[in-house]
Amino acid sequence: MPAPLRLGVNVDHVATVRNARGGRHPDPIRAAQIAIGAGADGITAHLREDRRHIRDEDIARLMVEIDKPLNLEMGATAEMVEIAIKTRPHAVCLVPERRVELTTEGGLDVAAQAGWLKEKVAKLTAAGIRVSLFIAAELNQIIAAGQIAAPVIEIHVGAWCDALAEGDGNRAGAEWERIRQGVRAARALGLEVHAGHGLTFETAEIISALPVVELNIGHFLVGEAVYDGFAAAVKAMRAAMDRGRARAGVEP
Figure: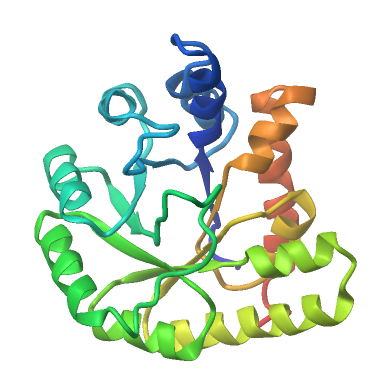
């Protein structure tokens, strides 16, 4: 029997729409509640250093007003570690962060920053917070994640999603093989594997056949909500993941 697959819904870009005009509408916390009602297993929110979408008060409200786990995406900075330890979300996902980027552009370089990241992982773990590292599906990064005692990795699958969307079959095939091998290597090291970035209904269904535990999806669902509503978009994503997971066992 395939293991259950969790869906984490990222509500950052509901906040982006709110912030474009100011005020309180649309409310990312209401969106989180709708997502949970439609089948989401948890909520993800990225508290950026420049607070461009999710704000501190949003995190405080999410901790009180939702009844599913909160996954706090954040840069591995002293400020964010302090906020996480004070707030105590269920989990944090450490991501690279630059002010000039539109969205997270790649994975953490854990191999080059192991000492610095190990300290942050240890502090968060000591506070009872589950830590994941957002990394590319590269063997050296996966090994480094295990060495600094992070129990979870989230694989950045954006390059594969982009290649498929652009019709570049050769690049998509190479990226897919890298993801497959990365999942296999991480599992061999005892790491829990999540995936995210750029996933659509189609790509989520494909990747759900791999032995990953959680998918985190946001921007695509917010975009689909413009057409069909947020609950319908989340339900459709849950159905796509369930179809893919039903085929688990075909992939490693």
